[in-house]
Image (cartoon, rainbow over all chains, first blue to last red; front, side, top):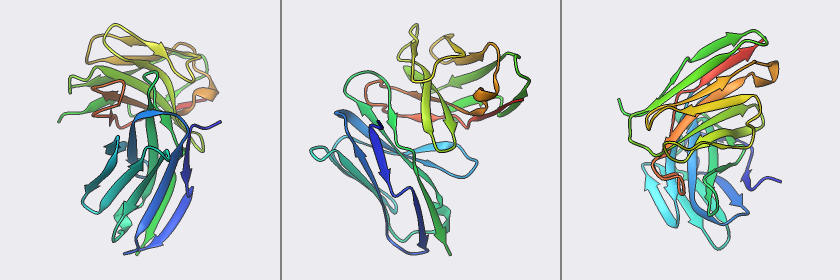
Length: 109
Length: 114
């Protein structure tokens, strides 16, 4: 049983397209994180959310606590956005995170 | 540069050898974590330390030990390496263990056990 489910697993887009990656979770959480990992690279934290919406440049993250769902949107996608995007949640109980298996995004010029 | 520093970046071990992965953070974070990442499995928690002086097992602790040497440093030790421990290892830290505020990762250690 996976507490965090992401969709899609793989995504290919043309440069300039609007992209949405979804994350659903099954536990009560204190926060949700979106992480980015470039091929062969390290992991970078993009957003931490506990409610509402956050925006950083072309990236927008939203969360609906009641529906236990979050989305990561990329506007005007660019080849440099090609990476694996990982959703992680901090549950109310305990000090661990639950991770999704990631969405692999490829943006074609 | 502020962040999480992991060493080494690459390592090849023979089965049965031991080694220690080092991790240090300079952000005054309370919590530190060790993960392994395997293809198709996502990140899995090995051990974590919610605060200085405490350590707890995660999802996959067998074959590993940890030491929270001080607030900055959290090391991971493989006492007798096995091929199943071939993986990419990430250290991370956060200021708040409850929410993961300030969640920051090291650049990873690619370990191969032959």
